[in-house]
Image (cartoon, rainbow over all chains, first blue to last red; front, side):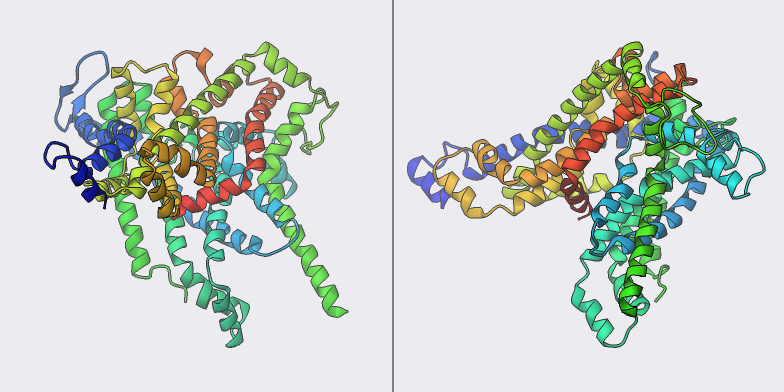
Length: 307
Length: 275
């Protein structure tokens, strides 16, 4: 319609067509976002790979060094400790997802005050890791609440220095990740549960299925996409864990709680060896990509199928 | 009668369970709040105190007067406002043609945006720091916010809202000769308020809480936002738990206020992000 109007008013060839105008306007609207994404999201994908094969410390121009960085990183025992810790962190995923699902089932009911409880479980999610880390350092202190509970329950003989233990410190930080994440995945699963048509559950009940049977036969299969999303997000977050470790232990004691991303951070911003940081980044990227592919495969082939 | 008793008992158990879990998630906050309000006695006591000893606000007065917490707070306000407004502007502009215009390259752009959510970009912050150096933006708030202004999740969230606007409204405005910019500002934006509020609250929380990236970009401790400043002060005054606790409470207050006022936006935003 607009085309014919333009034709009647102006000579056909002297003006660019309305399609061209639309495209021009569209790209003007998109320009800020496209420029920013090109510079800060797409370019690092390419430049990061380039940097991994260069020696660069900001002061002198980058110098091509081939696979030197990859060799240095793979021969650094600290790198393998960091990678091992990032993989160990995957332990938090099943615990977190199961607890969040159970919590979502628990709060998925009409009950006076239930939104208050949901809010209470969500508050850690919107707390900065800086604040969470400070608070949990106090919780884990010599005379903090964790030791008090441990002593009262008879689990500990005397107060324990959680964040200075070479192996347990990482698990102490994992508990913080769990505490901070459970509300997020609860809301995710709550949305998934509320999208399930009520009639299906009622039909199952009419057919004689009990509550638990209805859960496994109706709810869980329909929740599968949400479960896939939740576990995938949680897995990738676990591999990339960084902030809580940075605040709570700084990678210590003796680098024993360093994670892969903390290792990259230290190489780049404490040692200014950007090439090494980028080389380690390639490993983490490959690991993340591999885990997501594996994850989708497992879900598709029914690795998680209790019914 | 028996049935009634059973349901009362069941409700009692349920509320007990719900409250127990709430105590676990809220305990660190309650302890910190109590410590920040205590003006006497020991900080770490067995059993831990949830009711402040000699309650008073002197810790808050002292942390603002003796330490630059007031300045950090203002820095956070400035940085967060910059980030939130910038994100809303960039995303709401970009979402419009992606939702309501037909132009060559649109599908490719949508695919590329989706790709950014899947491609591994873990070490991007290393390259981005070097880029900011080249642009002369190290130690500036622009450098802190710029890499995250074009939020892909935000663009998709707003695009979803724009798609729900009736075509007749846009056509009528076009017949009246309104420019696309005018249509975006006068029709599309007002009709997408809930989605804009959701993106706004989400980016508010993200910018207010961020600390690693500001720590990397900002050199000058005078420019630190509160989250970074608290860690910095903790390093200097680790022994004074009460003061740091008061600073921590100050850092949480705006987040909690926004959360209470905009709970719906949070849930909508998350659901939008999931879709």
